[in-house]
Image (cartoon, rainbow, N blue to C red; front, side, top):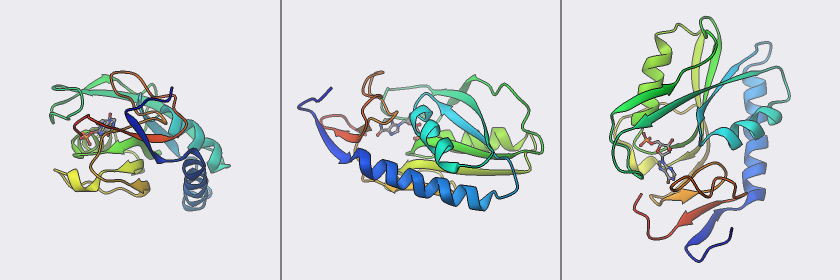
Amino acid sequence: MASAVERVLIPAEDLSARVAELGRRIRDDYAGRTPMLVGVLKGAVIFLADLMRAIEAPCECDFIAVSSYGASTRSSGIVRLTKDLSVSIEGRDVLIVEDIVDTGLTLSYLLRNLETRQPRSLRVCALLDKASRRQVSVRLDYVGFTIPDEFVVGYGLDYAGLYRNLRHVAVLEGVAS
Ligand code: IMP
């Protein structure tokens, strides 16, 4: 999978150490409760699978998918739900699990959408935060890494469907973020 155009940004060992830390924090914060982890397809799949095992306490998961219209590497701000949750989240402690928060438009849409379903609590866990690109402010309760404004792939994140299976996070040179 190695390619001349990618440069390692976060090695696999750093990812697993950070995910373990996040898992411990989430386990402690939700002690006595059973959080519902809502993974945003497809990018969050790898992160969610590791995070869930790192929590080491009862938790459930479900998935939601959104697509944003427009160019492939930029969020247009018009977000559409392409796959809904399979269960009700009313009264549940919901933790949205995202791969990366860039402009914040996708997450802001998801928060508004899920809030209407009356969860008991609604929080966000994002692996990567491209904070400098934010267009709408969104509260991130748990963040893995804050990264610079570069287009990244790996550990679930893709470019044109590829690179999701890299064990590390890499910068893809030559792609505008
Ligand atoms: P936002 O709505 O601009 O915050 O965009 C969030 C979504 O854009 C993420 O869930 C990713 O699917 C995609 N995205 C943003 N930045 C990157 C990146 O650097 N690599 C891969 N996907 C990205």
